[in-house]
Each structure stands twice: as structure tokens, then as C-alpha cells.
Length: 418
Image (cartoon, rainbow, N blue to C red):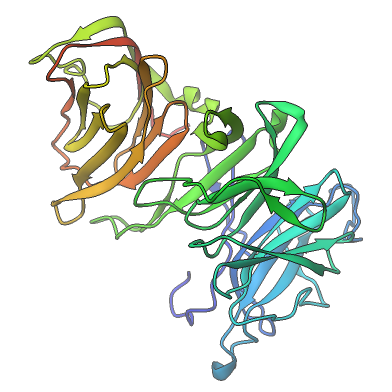
């Protein structure tokens, strides 16, 4: 958002990575167009077979789908049309399509086009927030330029920034279901016949944290993983030249549970590139007055715990002033921590059931965020906190004896220094 711009006239920034860990911000932007207005949310695809006809050399076209949002009353372009810009040089520079918009304004500030390839029906599929209650439209195309509105989906209580992606269930490529989610992460899982999405679940919670919004997925990374990254909206960080941040990339999978198929998220395995010092425990009994994490003093950690618990057990994990509490009687894990105003705040609460007498907890600790993954990513809490700089205290404590079956903690190197 460059300074001195009207609110609608945002840019698309551009960052590149070879490992999803280390990112380089480039000087290339997609900038507002004087006719079609500013660059709001959207997505991009690689046109492998040049169905768009935009290819000019050896590079496959990269096509960005942008909600161009303007303010007609202020002569800043039309209100929310869906436009495309294409790149013929691998995504470094983009040119606006001269026949934009590819979808005219349908209703109010309809926005956030997310485009994916549907292998089963051999067509491109766009999901679009319609800005009409909690409705999303589905559109299809064979050439990425001409789109047909084929159906509408309603996700009660969910608005903006859709994601719509086919995924194998339990890793079985012959059993794929479609995951449909909105900006707050809540989702349904179902089938898609090329026209209509038929939900097979109720709306499920995608994240239980306080700083999770507008996630995006990559569907073409090596080994067919679906990689997910979200925006963590928050207040400005004191004395920092930026505000907001992204969460750590996670891998999304669909897995069968006792309650049906659910979406799971865990940190991508490339995090191991940042591993530094390692701490390990096996069958460690935690008693009243003991602290398993007393030797930890750094800012950044990847913590993984497998804990044997009884129906009446509880334990606390302290992270630089943030407190994670597990109550096995209720089957709930909760988190609170300091924020910008130095007051303790609710950072989220999620259901976490005992499985085979144990619970699994993974915690990514960054300088201003905590991301908690329960039972291998069945429940996720993504939240910001603001610890005091001098507070380097960590603890794992329990009033009653319990056994940490296995725990591995890695301190992390900075992702900003490759």
C-alpha cells in the first residue's frame, strides 16, 4: 500500500522463494490500472498448455486474477470487476489484458477470485465471494478468459477470500474430495461434479486462533503437497517499520477421523532447514515443582510433545509469558498471552481429545507469534503475542504426575539469514 494513494488503489507485491522458508521481496509489482482500478485480492495460475494464448516464448504464461476495486463516485474505476494480468517472463513482469474485465461486476463489492485446475472435468474453476451474505459463486472456463457462472455455495458465517481445492483423503489419489474454505478458515468438505459443490460435512473450524485470515494455497509444489499460508492481522508492532505478518506455511491434508473427514494442517517439513540446537526427552515424568523446559533461553523454537494423560490430568506450558493450558477432563487446550498493551489476552481455545491415552502438541514460537498444532494438526491455534524482550522463560509443569512419552525441541535459526 504505497503512501499517498486512495484506499482502493493497492498494489500486488511480489516475493519469491525456492524453499518456502527464505523469501526475497522483488521490485516487481502489479500496479493499479487507470481504467480498471486498484489491485485487490485474487490468485494466480500457470497456464501449462497456453490455453489463454498469452505465451510469447519458452516460458509458460502466468496469469493473475485480480479483483480491481475502485470507487466510481470518486472517478477511481468501476466497482469490483474481475480482471487478469499475464506474464510471459515467468512471473517477473505482468501486462493487463486489453479486454478486461473477464467478469463484470455482479453484485456490490464481489471479490477475491481463486482459480484452480479441475483434472476430473478438464476445466479451470474460479471461486468468488459474491458479497451477498455468505454466498460464493463458482465459475468455469476453458481458456482462462471467458467465464461462466455455474453455481452458488453458501457457507454460513463465512465471508471473503475463498479457497477451493481437490485433495486426496488419507493419501488415496483415487478418493479425492474438495475442500472449500473462506477467509476465517472455516470450511466444508464435499464432492464437485464440475458444476455443483455438494457438501458432505457441516461447517468445520479451520483455526481457533485470534490472528488468522485470508489463507491461500499452492497446488503445484513438488510431490503434490497442498501448501497453505495465511495472513496474521494484528496491531502494529512497536518500533517496527511494518505491520501484520504471514503465518508459517503449513501442509494441508484430508484425513478420516471418528467424526468424519477433516482438514489437518502441520508445518511444512522444510522447517528443518532452520533447526539449530536440539533437546530430547523420552518417558520423562513431570512432577509438581519440576520444569522440563528450564534450560531454554532463545526466541525461536519448534516444540513437539507426545504426552500421556489421564481423564483428570492437566498441564501448563509457559512460552515467554504466554500460557498454554490443557484440561483433559474438558478435552480443551487454551492459550493466553501478553499483547501490545502488556495485558494478558485470550489467544484461542480448541477442542483436543485424548487419543490412545495421549495428546500430541506442536508449538512454533516466533518473536511475536505462537502457532499451536494439536494431535498432528487436527486443531490449530494461530495467534500473535508481544512478550517482554527480556522474558526468556519457558516451562512445562503439571500439578499431578504425568509422563512425557516423547518430546523434541529445536531452537531455530532466523529465516532472514540464509
